[in-house]
Amino acid sequence: MEKINQVPPILPGIMVLPPVSEKPYLVAGQCSNCGKTFFPKKEICPSCFDKGEVREIPLSQRGKLATFTIVRRSLGAKKLPYAMGYIETPENLRIFALLEDCDFDRLTIGMEMEVVFEEEELEEGRKVTIYKFRPV
Amino acid sequence: MRDVYVVGVGMTPLGRHLDKRLRDLGKVACFSALKDAGLEPKDIQAGFCGNALAPAIQGETGVGQNVFWEVGINKIPILNIENACCSGSSAFREAWLTVASGLYDVAIAVGVEKTYTEKGGMLDIGKPDLDLMLGLVLPAYFAFVANRYIQEFGISKEDLALVAVKNRFHGSLNPYSQFRQPVTVEEVIQSPMISDPITRLSCCPLSDGAAAAILVSKEKAEKLGKKTVKVAASILQSGSYDNPMNLSNWDLNIRASEEAYNRAGIGPEDIDLAEVHDCFTISELVHYESLGFAKKGEGVRLLKDKSTYIGGKVPFNVSGGLLAKGHPVGCTGIAQIVEAVWQLRGEANKRQVENARVAMTHTMGGVKEGDCKAVTINILKRE
Image (cartoon, rainbow over all chains, first blue to last red; front, side, top):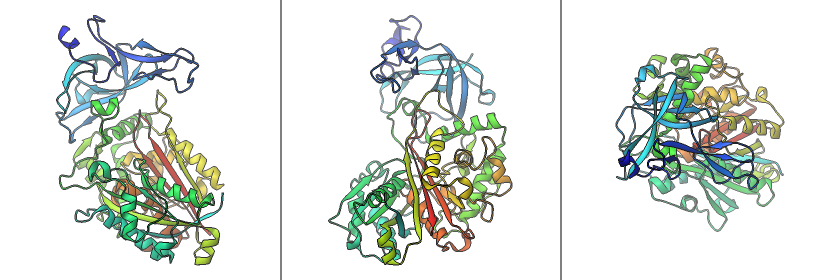
């Protein structure tokens, strides 16, 4: 876990990593006025403007697959094929995620997924920590 | 707001134009539109140019001034507009607005784009957001909608392929179309998989092209003897970006079409033909529903009973649409309007929709947090 901590998140503020938390987790924003949640966190709630304060909340480790696809042909440096989808979290958010450890043929909408964190090297060579979801 | 008329249109065939610059294509479209309107370059009082990707692909900015000068249009306000796939239709809306407001009597809108490169591939829209940084690509986003739609409404991959079959057939009737060969359901399904369930023939191609339209006040249209096609509504809207987002439809289209129908004082039952943003097969199917032509989940029926074929109740994309005619991003919105104008004037030859009086064009652009960035809807009426 210490190794992962040396590598910054792909986008600042979207996850908490060791040693701050022993178990890494994703972070969303929640408006103190209307209770709406955002991922990635927004500074200003679009519904409440200055009437609410957006606070950080941890996102659950698990969610349900809301939709998905398998990218078979693309131009980027990413190794093909790879799966991606939207995860529905208990916080009533739908978040975009790469999927891993999954049998492409067995992916189904509604299946239970859990978050994992790993290092990835971006096309420009920068090493970052990203999140993915895998079937439970 | 004053009444505004479209008095001149023109476009290049869409396809591969590797030997031409943006201005070479734009020149052809503007020249044709001027000749069609019976106007000279000096008659144009304001110019708007839609282009999405020239800064990224060609490294060119200020495309509008480059294009308009090729036909001798200068010394007037010229505005360059980038609004993703709605760049051209947003330029058209600005031209409409400038005449409708009374500021000017004669304005031109051009849309021009070159996305085809020798190495081919896929449109690159940069990596400004988390999903794009992680690896989201455009076909995958539409595949999300397709898979969700398939799960919610129980349609088959064969059903989805019917959109490409129809639009390729329509494209075979259009000399301006990039693809002129019809395809079968089997060919669509068996073409290489891009992003399940989106196959290569379920995607629009990379295209080059330009299209232009000239808009004038009622008095000017009367003087020209071309008071034929009126702009009954010209709508631009943006997305909500609310989470959780709708994954089997784009709510933005519902909002924009309601606004367009209200402004034009008509409903979907009054539309004789529609040119809609069929960037992928799933898109057109969903548009049937969000634009009010079918109930939620029932769009496939319009394909199965051939309602949206030429000769059907309300033909969709008789030009071939983006899937066959092509999708030069910033040109697309105006190319749709050019087709609508030709149809309303009865000049569409083999693909003419009989007695077309009211046409709708719909363009959808950009991806942001599971929604779109822009939608434009134009309703044009023959007088």
